[in-house]
Amino acid sequence: MNNHEGIIIFFIILFISPFVIFMGIGLILRMKGKDWQAKIFFTIAVVYAIVGTGICGTMLS
Image 1: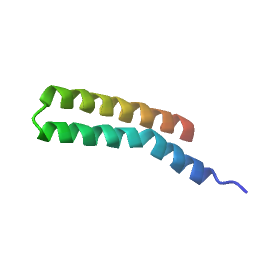
Image 2: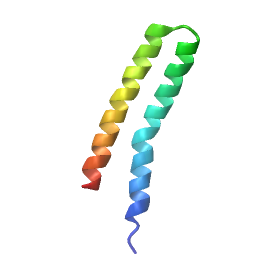
Image 3: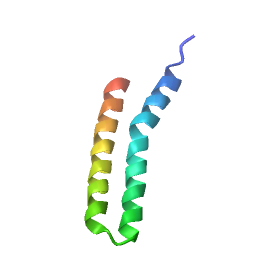
Image 4: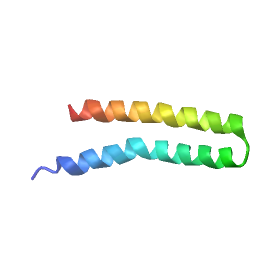
């Protein structure tokens, strides 16, 4: 019994969830007026998104 779909969904969630968390923290900091700290979290979120989709894409091919 092959359950490759479950493993793929697990890894997608694993690699994309830090992006969502850091983006949320960045948005909260932006609303509080702490712009330079928000930029750091936005940058980290973008790096996680690029790395996460790259790793997931490599695993899917």
